[in-house]
Length: 475
Image (cartoon, rainbow, N blue to C red; front, side, top):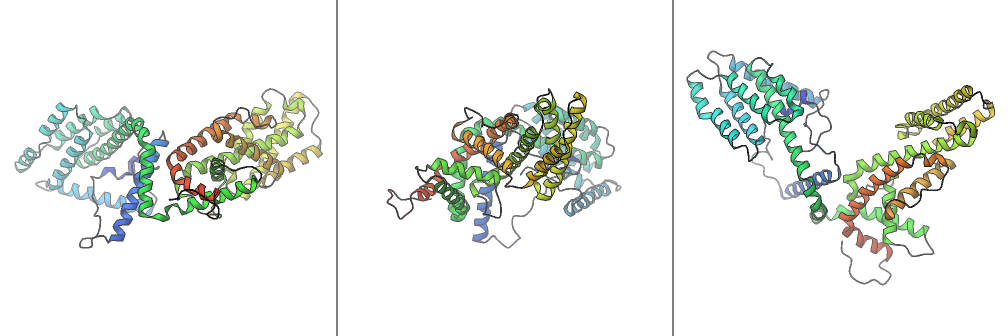
């Protein structure tokens, strides 16, 4: 079971009992290559799941259901409706046909049993007594089966076992009329309760998992590498590119492996997919790194706008209490998500320029200070609009300061002093520190897990085969 961001309990597949799918078509055993591929996929899946549990404190399993407006969602809805309509038809016969209902009762008993802890001895004995399938079969044969009584017991048991967050949903089951609606509601809520128990177990085990996480992930990746030796090719290219840049940038002094690795990590915050494929060892953190990269670009743009504004704005206005905070709030809101394309950024920066000029004029009117000249307004507007260019001098300067700040955090924790820049960047120091902390956590953990795989690649980059080198490098 993998996490699904679309948590929609009403349309979840949990309102049906578990349906097991075949591993392969009957009479067609998997070939050796397919078996190898399945093993590799399982290794990757287990590695990804373990990594997500360890690094993501907010990790939760969620019901796995397709979007209702998708083809899969519509087909699922049709299948579910047919499933429950079939049960309704059986129960409406005279006499009722309970064959289908018996299977569902057994499934309910199994699900309730899976929610019980070892200490629930009395509840387990009670469950076996009330949902005694042999006894229920006798009641069916004698026409004495009372589904409402069994449903009431099931709901009461669910109420005693569920997390407080599920209390309203369990109470709502008591309002349902008819056995089909009761069965459907019970299966849906039981599915949610099972996920709650899994999430509780994961959070309880998380401290213990973290103690073993580095060794586990390293061993799993080695298994992947044994099955597919090409699983490190993109990582090799990524580190070699960083090594070439570092060697070119620092020609007069020795280059360290750590400097190359830090440069490689910094590249991930401004990754251009057209350049090369993403390194395999970083794939599990790509979503987090892409999000951090977007935050970096937004902070650079925000600081650039504030820097340009402070240069063109009179000191009397800039130093007014609350002015910078109000200006920054407006700029931040407008820049949110604006980095997705050049066209969007151009349009947003035009709005930012107009908002900045309006804010400055409003403050000057309230303070009865001298209004900005038309020439200053045109210059300020033009400078803000020009920030869409990647090579804009102000944007490049601020970007270098931000990159330096983050790189300093990678080299040895928080830097002893903030980057030397005008006050606009210092206004963002809290956001930069939080961003650097999150980036540093990803980097340090990745380095702990995959350091042994990086070492021979970095040695080959620093000491090419043409030069004397001791020891044999093995991937």
